[in-house]
Image 1: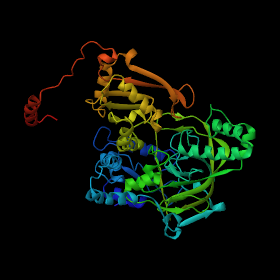
Image 2: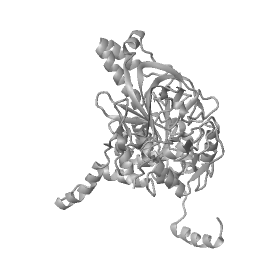
Image 3: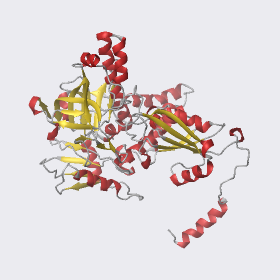
Length: 528
C-alpha cells in the first residue's frame, strides 16, 4: 500500500529499525550536515552501507522542530521507499508497459483490461482544500517567513542557508503540463530565495517560454531571439539587452515549492523523465496509487495534499541575483552565479511540520542511492532507444554525470562509438563526461572488472573518442560554463573490420566441473 505522506513513511522506517532519533541539541548550521555526512558514509563496503535515516528532535533555535535526513540513504531504504524487494521489479513493470504482449484474441484483450485500469489509476487527482493536511496552517502577508523553519547551512563556505530537498513545481505556459523538479534554493531572507534551475532544466525552459511570449507580444522576433540567448542564463553566457529586460520586468511566473512529501513523490522530482511526462504521474506509477493534489492559495498550481510544507510565490522574469557558493555532490563548491529569485506570497504547512533535508558532498552520500535507483529503474527506457545495451552502471565516484559504464551486445564494427553518441543524445545523459563501453560478458556493476577490460582492451589512440557538447553546470573543469569536451572509451574486443587483424586472446576461466568440485571442498575449509 502506498505511503500517503512523509509521516507514514517515517513510521515504517522507525518500525523497521532504519531510523535513529537524535535527541541531543544540534544546530542546522553545519552540525546536522556533519552528522548526516558521517551517517551516510558509515558501513561502507558492507550490507549496511549508507547508515540510518536521522530524525533530529532537538533543533537549536527551533523549539519543537524536527528535521529528517538520509531517508533514502541505503539500498534497503530505497527499496522500502518504492515498496519493492528489488529496484529491478520496477524496471520489470516498465518493460511490461513498453513491450506489452499483443493480444491474439478476445480473451487476451479482456486479460489486459485490469492492467489498463491500473495504469489509469496512476493519474493525479485533486481533492478539496478542507481535506488537505498541508493546509492546516496558512500564512500570508507579514507572517510569511521561510526562516521559521530550520533551513540548513551544510558546508562552511556556502553562500548561506539552502533548502536542499525541495520539489519545485512549475507549469508550461503553452501546454499547461506541470513539472516537478529538484533545484536547490538559497534563502536570502524570510520572503526570497534563489532558484537554481540550471539552463538545461525543464523549469528554466518554462521561464524562457514565458519570456519569449512576453517579448514576442511586446516587440517581435528580435526580442524573442535575445530572450532565447539570455533567458535564465548563468554567468559566462549571453545576457539580455536592457530594453528586453525592461519589457519583461514585472511579468511573473508562478512557482510552488513543496518540502516533505511521501518518498515516491520526492524521488520522482529527480528522475530524468521526458518533459511530456508529468512527475505526478511517475510518482503515481511508482506508488501504484494516484497522488492527491490540492490547489494552492495564491498561485494557480496544484501541490501534494499530504505535504509537510508548501511555499507559494513567483519568479519575476528577467530578475537575477547572485547565488552560491554551494558545497555540491561533486565534492567541490559550485561557485557564485546568477539565478532567478522566488518571491514568497504564502506558506501553508501541517501542524508541527517535519522539515526534510539532505546534504551533498563527497560520495558516497544519500544521493548515491537515489542515483542508483534512477539507473536501475530507467534502464528499460534507455534500452528502448539503444537496444544493444545490456546494462549500465553509474559509480558513486562518478557523481551521476562524470562516468557511465556500459555493456553492449556487439554485432558490428564501430558499435561502441554509436552507443556513446546515442547516450550523449539522450536527455540528461547528454552531460555524461566519460563513457566506458565493454562487451556483454563483462559485469559493469563490478568496477574492478571494467577497469581490467579497459586497461587491457584499448589502444588509446584508436579507441578513445573525444567530442564537444553541453556539459553539466556543476562541471568546474570545462573550458566554458555548460560547454566542454567528453570522452568515450571503446573497451570491447576489436574486430578485423575495425582494423585489428591479429588474434584476440581469450580470458582465463576454469571449467565448470573443476569449479563445482572446488566449491564442495571450499565449504569444508571454512575460509571466508
